[in-house]
Image (tube, rainbow, N blue to C red; front, side, top):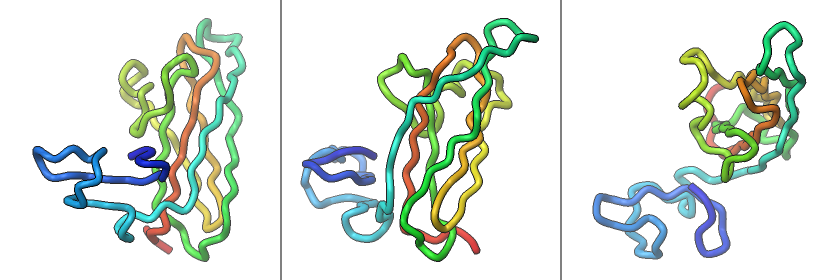
Length: 138
């Protein structure tokens, strides 16, 4: 998932084929309607120190708006410490946070509310989202 020849998309190639190339031999290709992207974005959010627990930071919910699809779409949410190279899906913070770490998200036909989870030892994080045109549920 990412930028390929100037367009954002999601590509999965068969074994031995480089998905970043233009071979046309993809198992999954967002150019052809399998996973069409409706909206993408990222933001850096800053936490507030928890006075009861040193080195813990908590965050306000983050609200994302996009053009109304008329149904709840498939979304992918990820995050990382703000000093990392960028947010990853799934979350890079899951690798070093508690095993119960998760990003809760309310999905609407025209937006998301991301419950940004608390972190340990980093006071800011990058959150990222990809909204697909695919319908997940009503």
